[in-house]
Image 1: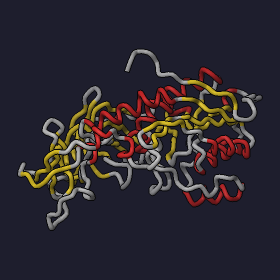
Image 2: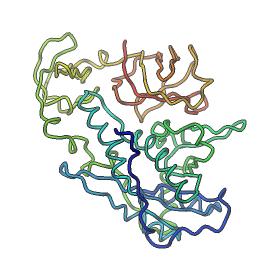
Image 3: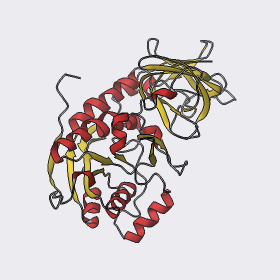
Image 4: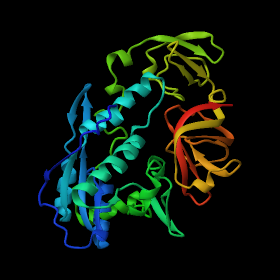
Length: 375
């Protein structure tokens, strides 16, 4: 990436221009996808007395490996129904440079990236938030994520949602700690059922819209759809964990650590991808026990509660977005990396995915990119 800042452009208002009448302290921008969650979040904020501005990021969507711009029309119409101003922000160049290009490089390196976390950390809560402050003077930002911002002794902390099954704090850990005081999450104490019911009562057009796909920039929702032919078709050797050849694979970019389906190898017992070696273009399969690990290291760590991150401190960690955080202790902490030891082996930690740590009150302590692991 060059030293030049990625290009971001504000487009004309979708309907009415932003014209606030109250103090800056009650003005807030809501990042809106056009889904039911962000729409209800905007409604709740308006009901709570905020002057709300709807913002939709225009990002490239790859269809048949060719990009087109996502228009986000549902978000604009939802804002019109709610009676709030709406603007598009063209972030296509920034998205391609900060999210999409690293996404490709990660799979080529045998890693499993998490573009949703990158989009939140590098784009939404950094470049876009700062851009909105410069353009509109708005310093508060809200989203429709299921997570909470809790206040304690004058500090704001990111925490898990009340509805643990919908909690999305794992994806938000990369926000700067200094911004949490101005970050608002209206759905943190709600449930999806309650939110959808509220949308129907409001009679807004997005009330019955289905859940958005996990990978927003791939039209099919499958990361393989946006890989180049060279990335997707580079066949190599498949081995067991002892290095014995047992078959061939279709190309390492088609596999992730922990994958069981689509391996093209029948062993009479469940086997999973346990190792991806880029230099030898090899993947190794192992049993669930062989691909589970207790000691996991992470790099590029973002710390939200510094005093909690010290050696031998008992915390709770997640190595993927779903499931409950598991007991672990901090084994080592550096300037931008950390190592934790789980009480029990964790299934298939993936380099490129995230390790997120929580304290006993569900507050996010820190998170980083998984770099290595051992038994």
